[in-house]
Each structure stands twice: as structure tokens, then as C-alpha cells.
Length: 446
Image (tube, rainbow, N blue to C red; front, top):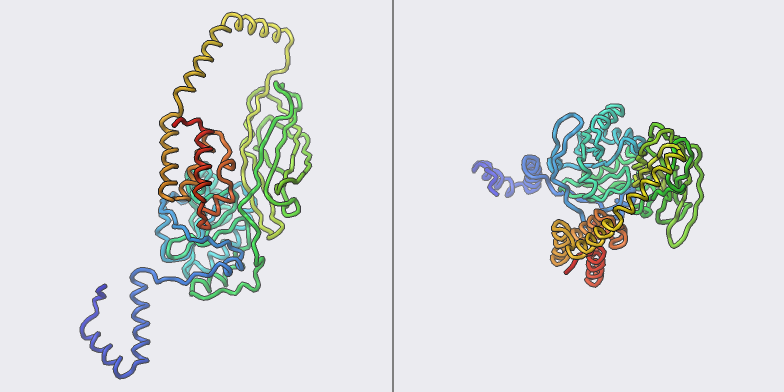
């Protein structure tokens, strides 16, 4: 590369090199530093995996590139993530409803205040649709670093954010090199990040834990109605929420699941019981509720907050709820008239309905999957052929989820994270089994 050095300067440096080698070395170092400051950022020595773990950070190995997405901010501006290249960056995924997120932001502000002029920045990202709510949240906490809107949760999905808060450490090279799940005191890392930015090895002696527990299996929950429908307004009914996660009960402090606050819906009682089997734990919460109005109640999402007692991390996640339809109180005479009307309709239209059902079944059996589904499955097959296991895993879990199937049946969360962050390669025989099973379950014809 031509640096545009004047001829007289070159002659001077050669004379210095001949007469005073030590002075020449000092001048060379200073000149190289000047070129680096005005050109591309110099390569930075990264901490090794043991050092990251000593800081309470899970290493991402191999590193993955930072997205080049441009996102809107609460200040009504635009931020391009790749513009942060050349400095250290922390991406923190949060939600306004997440208690642990709120708890850790003050210490994150302490870290930003102490280091942002030295080369460390922080971007907070929320996937919530209510952008005004996110802006009020940031203003209330006095957040000075950019707060971005992850519209549609695309980045959350790309980086497999399954619980909140989750933070990623990005090196000046623009690669994600570390991950933290759960809340922590970020102010403890001020000396460590200052050392890392200087290319030095940080002191991890005062930080714990040294060995981090698994973090890739956040709790999940399923909701089911225990009371037989129909349910009338003013009557109490029972709802079960089964919370499951990998590990043992003694490792977690699970807080009761939180339902959306709905006008006209009252929680009368909440009791829990727990069990463990086959490497997983389950806590069933049975709620007694009452609805005062006859209408549909959407109990979604169900929010789960918990503390990992092995490392003290506070975290939260969401699970899919359900919709409950509340009917008007039972009226015997009206009910008899409805039954008579229903029987009449069945007698008149029964044969026609049966014929339509059989015709529709034959049509579904012969038509196969629609064009969009087949195209998506072909992309999955192409990823397998090209050896892109990250893409294969992402498409497989997305296809299953989008069509009402459990992604865990085909690619477990543990395997997905090993591929995404650990560079794990899936044996060809397992790839073939996964693809064939998913194809059969989607009812895709050859």
C-alpha cells in the first residue's frame, strides 16, 4: 500500500536507522500507530475461552459475524450495526416487562459511562411493537446509549435469543465473540474491559463463577384448560400452566408465571406442585379464575421470570398462552330451541356436509404441500447439500414451528446451539433422518 511518504522523510529515516537503530524503532512504532489510527483498525488480541468464562461470559467459538442491519432508535434516528466496527460493542436484548432487564441496566450504564470514551459502546434492542413504551422505559432509566427497535424480532431470531436479558460481546473486528444470558452487575467488568481494550489479559480472580452452568435451556410453559367447556360468565374455572426446563428443581428459583392483565378477568387462587423425571423438571401451577363478561379472553403471552441459583443470574422468557371463550349464563329454554334448530340443520344438511368432507379430504391428499412450503423445504435440502449446517438447523426449526410441529422433535435446542455457536457438525446419517422425518410430518410428496 502506498503511504505517500515524502522522499526527504524516507532519506531521514534511513539515516536514523544507520546511525541510531533504537531511535529508528521508536519512530517506526509511532508512525505505524498513526497509520492505524487513520486507516483500518489494528488487530486486537482476544481473550481465550478460559478468560471469557472467568469473567462470567460464555465464549462464542467460532465467532459469528455481526449483522449489517440498520435499525431505528427511540431517538427517531437510524443506527447501522456494522458502523460500530473498530470498537468493542455490547448488544443487549431486553423487554420493558422483564424485571431482570430493568435491574441490570443501571450497572450497564456505569460500564458505558466509564468506558465509552475509551472504545466500548452499548446498543440495547427490544422487539416489542409498542415503540412509545420502549422510549418511555429508556427515558425512565436514563439510558444514554442507543436503544434500538428490533422490528419483528429478526435479530432476536438470528442470534437465537430465547430468554431475557441476553447480551452479546462484539469485537472490533465485527464478530460476536461472547454471550451472557441473565442479568448481572456489569460495573464489575469495568477493569476487565479496560484491560481487554488495551490488548491485555484481564484479572478474573475477583469474579465468579469460574465454571458457568448451561444457559441454553430456558423454561418453557404450556397452558391448558382444566374445566370442561362451555364456561359461563360469573362462574369460576381452572387453568393449568406446566413450566418445564432441563436440570433440577434446586438449581432454579422460579417465580409464578404472569398472565396478561385483562379487564373482567380475576385470579381467585394460585397453587403449585413440582416433579422431576428424565433429566427435566416440571412445576404445575393451577389457577382458579373468574370472568365477569361473556367474550373471548386472550391469555397470551405467559411471562416467566426465574433466577439461576448456580450463578445468581436473573432472567425471563415468554411462552405461548391460549384463548378462552366465555359464554352467556345458561338459559334452559333458549338452549332447547337451539338444540331443535341444530337437529333440523343436521337432518337437512348432514348428507351434503359428509360429501363435502370426503371431497375435501381427497383434495388435500392429492394436492400435497403448497408451493411456499415446498420451496422452503428445497432450501433446507440445499443447505444440507452445501454443508451449511447452521442454515439447515435454522430452516428445520423454523419450518416445524411455522406448521404447528415441535422443533425439538427434529433438532433440540442443545444441538442447535452447538451448531450455531460451537461449530458442531451433524453426521450425515442424522441429517438424512431429520430431513426425512420432517418431510413425512409435513406430508410432502416426492
